[in-house]
Image (cartoon, rainbow, N blue to C red; front, side, top):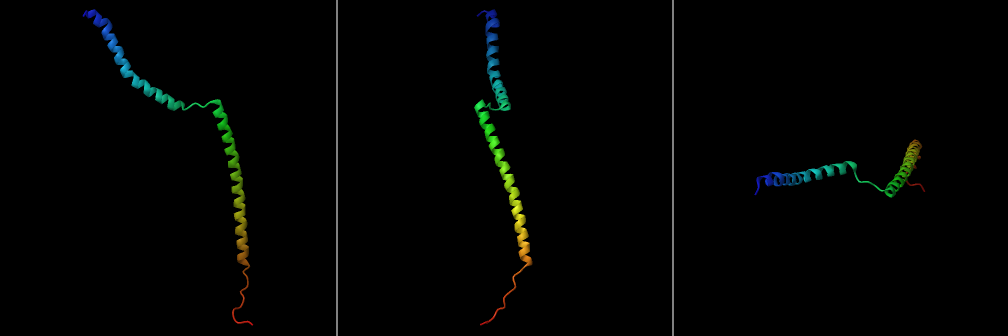
Length: 99
């Protein structure tokens, strides 16, 4: 074989092959990192669906906050009623043989 052939063709081809073999895993890692940072992309329909779901959840949370307020008021009323009833104990009836 001609030494010029080896220097001009074989060595550059071997270098390119080595670069590709070593570079592919690095490119794969870079692609994975970029995909993780960007996250999955949603279509317009999915975005509208998610916006509707968020609005529904906001309405539901608002209703739950209202119910929590009403429950707190009812607890106060029950406590008040218990205190009033505790003050006015029923007179005890005498035991024994009444006829």
